[in-house]
Image 1: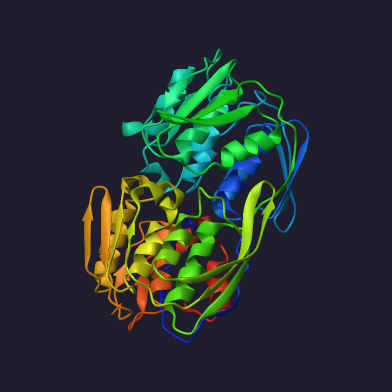
Image 2 (image 1 turned 45 degrees about the vertical axis):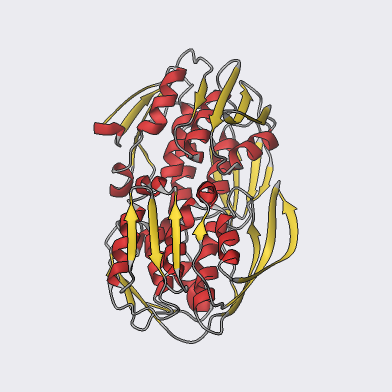
Length: 444
């Protein structure tokens, strides 16, 4: 599948129970950061378990364009010989980040405090996403950017020649904003301070610490205050990427709604800033057990055993949203099979993802006969007590998570569920269809 080419219509239908072991690819968030921090370190960083989806491959190409030596040496095995903090070279061509919102925003942060110029673009979906939330704080360091209306791509950024450290309070619960500011702070003298009112995924802080940066987080009356001391010498690391909990969400949720299913998912990352979906599913009555809990590469992991379950609707705590923001689409699909209504509030961040995910899920669910309520910052799904009609076609808007959510849904509906385009799935989970078929799913 290609996230950049001809649309690929897909369909799923109910069949037998799902069973077996689901070998989930590496974590997307950790994979992006492994390549970027490896490029900013001194020495050779060795990475195993790297996700080889299109988003990550685009980040790898970008790091090469900025002067790092990035090599694939085997399945999921990569090396990055870095240029050190402040060592980025000016790329000779436009940086095409494909569909990768995380990739482009983190790369902008990483280059924004070096005296170089780079132009960024992406696919149609990425070119429609606002970049002002990133370029505004980077401008405080001294970076300049020129883009289309609302700061959308294509966009050219001129890095700061004499960057100034900043103290910035993020207006949105966004790990991308936080990470861009922290990466900009790496090549800035003094201390850069980022304050977030709600805790978001902390892979960047964990990994910066692992590479040797001086970074600390304290909770204050303003929120979570993260202080980074600039201009460290980052030292190359050996990184074992845990398996992606956001990708694991799809077979987990499919197994819960397909009667008689039982699957095992080894080595799933359970970073507490990412595990909100699993907490919510357990509250809904999901039979999920966490086996062999341990820590690998500074990240908590476990093997998940999942059995089909009768689910009940819940109200998801608003403060949990940052820890499961990418999982609301698949939660919405699962909620259709629950008894009672599932209420999701504090989710306005979904409107500026690969597409407006609240609108995309609402329209797609209605097409399957599910009653929903929506607002700027909430989505309510009225559960059908396991009896969901299906039979509709969902528009995906070049969004991988929308496509996978409806394909999982169709495995338990009375009639098949179709999506207009599954091509974008390759950006984050290139083996999705083969993996699901291996568990017994009927996806074509």
